[in-house]
Amino acid sequence: MMADDVLGTHEHHLVYGTLFDYLTGEKLTDTDDERIRQGISKRMVEELGYSRHELIPRLTIETLFTRNFVTSVIDLTVMLANRYCMIVRYGPGSLVSRERAACAAARVLTPHYRIPLAVVTNGTDEMLIDTTTGKVMQEGGLVIPAHNDLLQMVPRLSFLPPQDKKRQELEKRVLNTFDLDRCCLGTWHI
Image (cartoon, rainbow, N blue to C red; front, side, top):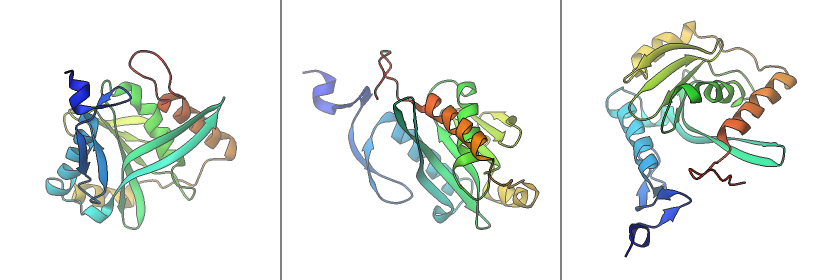
């Protein structure tokens, strides 16, 4: 009997069954990636001081370009002082390849303003990005700001108005391209 027969697969990920979301209690598919996402949520609450209601999981942005419909998932969106101020996106592998898509997501997630900060993480390393400039503010081990540190930053952050429609479309194209689900074998799932 093969491992896939016991555990199952979801596309190209091992599925261990189900687990419950740390923040919401929602039943989710239990994969290695989801376990890392849950660990990030748990660390933000238990070690960094965020309350569960300040972390909104799995907001989405839907795009359709060149017949490719893509749902981009924002793993966590942090709300402080009644504003989304930071997003957190997880993905295995290199962080550098995820910077641009994280900035794009932060710039179009809400129609009211651009979210000023983004974190990309592979579960081990993290990168904190100023989404206005696209510049990396901190990188390395664990750099997600603690709750009180981020709260102190909020008055100094730039919550810029939405970009014009043409620029928003370009940002959505970036998301569509970067988040198109490609299997590790090189075939595209559309």
